[in-house]
Image (cartoon, rainbow, N blue to C red; front, side):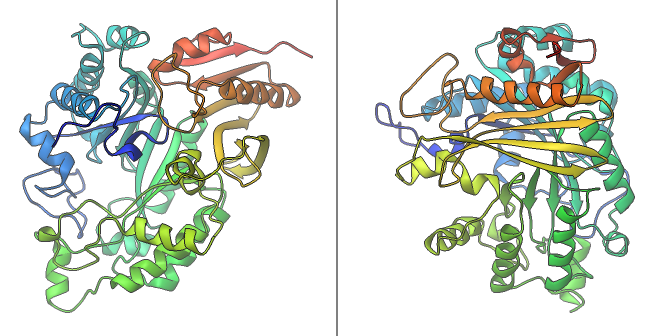
Length: 456
């Protein structure tokens, strides 16, 4: 890669949402339940290919978490991205099935790399990271709906959990050898949400036993049925990969993936049905064409779909489509006459308050997720959008570090007090604890930042 010119930021969309994502890949390991029929077996982490970018980077350093983090930070620095606010993502899908000691060492290694110092314990590494140069402001772990441990996730400093849901249909789960049930999805969603985690679902249209009509019907159910209602989505249309059982069914004529036109159609309909409190993180897997037997090969299909939707001035409600960073990227004039918008909805037997700072064009500047249930209140997410800035840095052309976060927290505190709640807790990335301390919050024994709310 050619060295960037002075002040040039390569691949600017990487940090356009306000944080710098650093993904690490787990070493290969078979799932406890076996393999889903669409998963290949290619001597790399299950469901990935040897030429998936994150796998290639991981293999180069023998899957060392420490070396992967160091390498990614260096790459971002070379491209002139800020690396102060890091979102760590542990990929592989079955992290909580690895030996417990491995899990703790792996997470500690991620913090050690951010801290540029090897600590004796995970707790020591987390404490160091509170004031480190590269702070972990969010930690995401991928897992299965039948395999999670709330206490352990809190120990790790995790703030977001991505569940491999694929589709909410037990018959299809059996057909694809998924190894869990819809009830597992419901239970995991509720327990993780109650603990304050942000919930992401991986959804896979086009599975054997489904069709366009069924996919859309079940997708709509994700947001009409309060037992689900994820905060985030990754949409991964089913593809046929070498070494999978699905490949054998394909060659026997017993399975046919969606065509490019069908894939575009279902994705457009799905995007149109995503509510404003949900963010579509990714569309399409990064699977190189040489590892595709059948299925849509276009990795950047989302880019084409969204370009067409923007051309038609389609008013998608999902978060990423409305983020201010993309409006600035496209050189749009952003009206800074801002207002607070609150969306209240029921989810997992509790009340969710989705607070947004938006302008008259519904461009999103910042958001907060507040959950109230049985006399307790939890802030599950606070995020200010726009180009990522270094800690303490202020620029007139961005909207980070302008006091919007404080405004949203004050609103959450007011809503909590109106609900007669005496203390508010925040699930916080380790690297954001210092920020919350300045607002009167203290770290409790479970890893939450907590504040007693004075009575009116």
